[in-house]
Amino acid sequence: MSNEKFNLIILDSKKILKEYDLCDDCLGRLFVKRLNGTSNKLLGKKIRKKIKHKNSKCFICKNLFDTFPVILKKLVEASNDYQFFTFLIGAILKPSFIDRDDAIRSKFSLRGIDSIKTAVTKELSKQFSKKTKSISDHDSPDLTLTINFKNSSTETRSKPVFVFGRYTKTSRSLSQKQKSCENCNGKGCSVCCFHGITSFESIEGQISKYLYDKFDAKQVKISWIGGEDKSSLVYNPGRPFFVKILDPKKRKVKFYKKIALREMSLISLKIIPAFPKVPIRFNSLVELSIFTENPIQKNSLKKLSQLPKSAVAIYDKFGKRIEKAIHSFKYKKTGDSSFMAILNVESGFPLRKFVVGEDAFPNLSDLLENRCRCTQIDFRDIEMEWQQITSHP
Ligand SMILES: [Zn+2]
Ligand SMILES: [Zn+2]
Image (cartoon, rainbow, N blue to C red; front, side, top):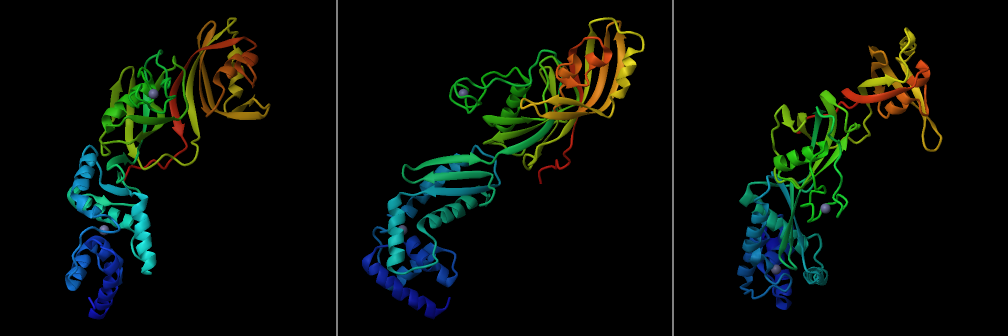
């Protein structure tokens, strides 16, 4: 430390301390950058010793830093429930603290120094990091802790975890989605224990419940790659889905390759860095069980051989024509008035309309000149056009 610089600081400090009492932390903060130092408190102490000044109550912070052992204990306690490797501490100070800090800085033309708020969060972060053996991270912390000095309350929030997986379904009476809590519309309230849903019978309900336990979380948001009827089966390898787990207390978990739940299974769950940024295109390999009004005439099913690599046209609610591709189409007669069709179609394909013949061209009823109805729609495979599913680093 150069003596000349320090002597100048002593001169400035004398000027300030003549009018305002400051604690070691605030005093040191005003000059620490001039010396490229790291500890406000140590510098403050050193200056005070040199000019033999006694501190009573800091004009700026009212000796806020003396309360840090208590604050730190609070923060550590608040973090105890969470698994985290990185953190960020935020502080809410009474406006009067910031006003007094600004006043001193402008009166004595002190530029380029940390504000009282920055000093508070920096010092708390330093101590918290030491105590919890975790790393301070501004950009994407696992855990964010906010201390409100107005009422000395703390708030914690952890970064969401994202999971990708697939599910299979072996029941013809299991819905995909769960109805939202009627009280909060899914936002989360005390009625639904902050889950956003109140019952758990569906695919969504069971996935949610499994993940609440796994990540010690209250709420998850599922993003589906397509959907199916309550009566549809979904075969291995299963329908893909993404989940955002909100405020998880655990974040490093391991999954079994296959997790059996009630009338469904979860397969290949893994943690991923984020949701995909673009809408995902996908194709479904679907098995349709179809009944016809009249017996199927010999050779009439042959008319269906024109369907592979074709498209079906539908009209949206604005009357706009949309085409949906049929990549492949196979069929098998299963009775006098029934057959099975296995087709690979692009996402959004109007399966029921295509069978019945309502506003979809071509369609099975027209092609066979025999009114068709579909009794079962089962999913053999759903292929996503998304390759960037990588494991969390
Ligand atoms: Zn102070
Ligand atoms: Zn609710």
